[in-house]
Picture (cartoon, protein in one colour):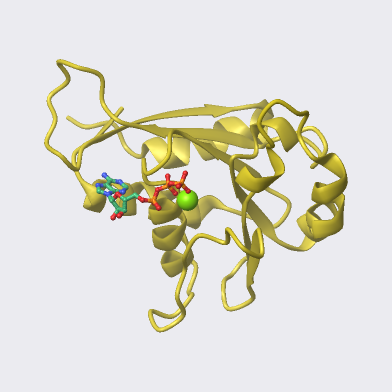
Length: 166
Ligand SMILES: Nc1ncnc2c1ncn2[C@@H]1O[C@H](COP(=O)(O)OP(=O)(O)OP(=O)(O)O)[C@@H](O)[C@H]1O
Ligand SMILES: [Mg+2]
């Protein structure tokens, strides 16, 4: 799937937002600067987080709660729990309390692939990437892949994809 620009990313995020429930875990992957945090910002707005509440990368705190959202949104960026040449920092993960938060919130996690099992399993995996050479692309174009596990994951994947273009 192709995202022509950030508006397309915002639209996809809103479609996910309309389907998201507490208990869902969305693992967001993709290279540095691809637009994972931008996706979460648009998602947060669609869930009711007001525009004056900044939605930025939680690189220092690693996780940020948005109680203004419905469902409550928890956004984490676990990049710092992935030390180079060492295994993923599962003890650091446990300290964040994300597993416990999951039942009452939708969790959206950047750099979370290595932690998905410890968090109870991903509902949806969403990858945002830069288009491959040759793809129709402007500087803001991104490619997107979704993969949902289980019935719930398939539902969410369909929601993100949206109605087929005619
Ligand atoms: N189609 C698009 N989708 C998402 N973001 C886009 C798009 N086009 C341009 N951008 C811009 O690209 C930048 C992506 O930065 P962002 O912080 O979201 O990346 P990230 O994937 O979270 O990186 P990191 O791995 O460092 O956390 C933002 O400035 C955003 O405005
Ligand atoms: Mg980010």
